[in-house]
Length: 310
Image: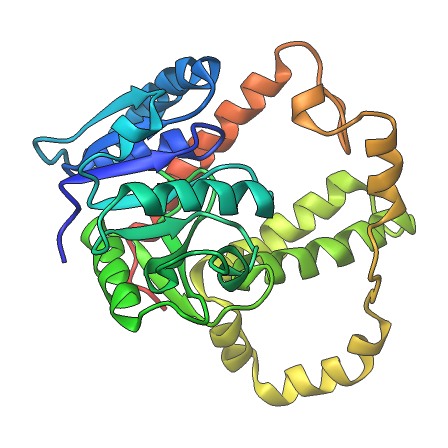
């Protein structure tokens, strides 16, 4: 399966520009659409930044690719071979947008949603042709993290899943094929980890700084190379069983949201976007920290790409 000749990305928020830049890098003519002209103006700069990051990764350039921003959705969808919906995580909004997409493109066009966890079947309920809707969950930043979750809904055609997996592999990403569950796999695992992290910090067991250090080097470093299933094999299933026997019952089983988080959001402290959250950020520090993170992701990806998968 090759890269689509023409792709449309609906939604120019935090992920749309990176998705568009990557597809264009591999030769697709991409139209990036949003109802907000302001968002599209920002997106041009975000696409340019993504291109710089891809240059740093030495990602080859396939001739013919480009990104055009388009406020007119009908024009953006005209002639598309692949449509990726990347609007905010609101079910009603997504259903409305998907209805418009379906009415504008041919029956052979794959309609993919970048939802991070809304069930595909719920989004497809009002569609005339739900068999061509499929989950295509990119991890943020989408142009840097080479893994995509491919998720079928109850009525998704298996052939559509097969085609999308081929497209993902064509631009060198790993396609994770999974069944439909709320949150999908990546976020289910991530939020299980975050729940325990929040509980331990809230209980005063560890500071947020030391928590980050512990997870980054004690867990993240290993898992980036090994993966959890292989890690258990390496350690020994008998050891895992022995520790899990006493430890699992002591882990957090909070079904709500940590008061550490709700207390901060109640004060309007949302993290980097407001200049303060679990950490406080001085003027200019957010931009610097984001740049450090991107540089780190580029460096780690280069390192991981150079070793044989374990």
